[in-house]
Length: 141
Image 1 (cartoon, one colour):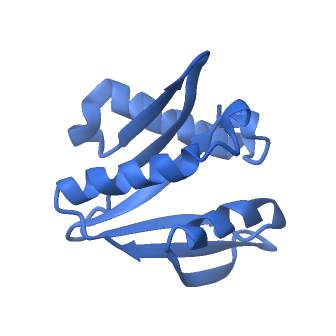
Image 2 (cartoon, rainbow, N blue to C red):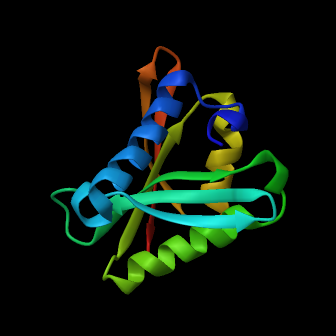
């Protein structure tokens, strides 16, 4: 599903797979990777991967929010985000952070976070590669 989005490079797709593999091998508590999955009529329509920030108190990171191309424009990303925030609040989480690229291909991701009341906390130029910076968003829950 991550590859089908058409935005992520091979390394990013491998990282997404690694989170799933770690979760399946060790479970959410031991791996630190939690998932919410949205089923659709033909299989999985989307998911979020999230986990506690190591060494921080009640801070969580949204690692991935992925919606299949067939489920885009349905409001699923908003519903998944809201459900993830609710799950984090339920275990005492008080802040969510999310990171994304500053490349033009990720403009919709950055707009999505802003539309969900996340604030841009920082930008780090040339983080991923020359010309590809890091945008860090955060939201108090």
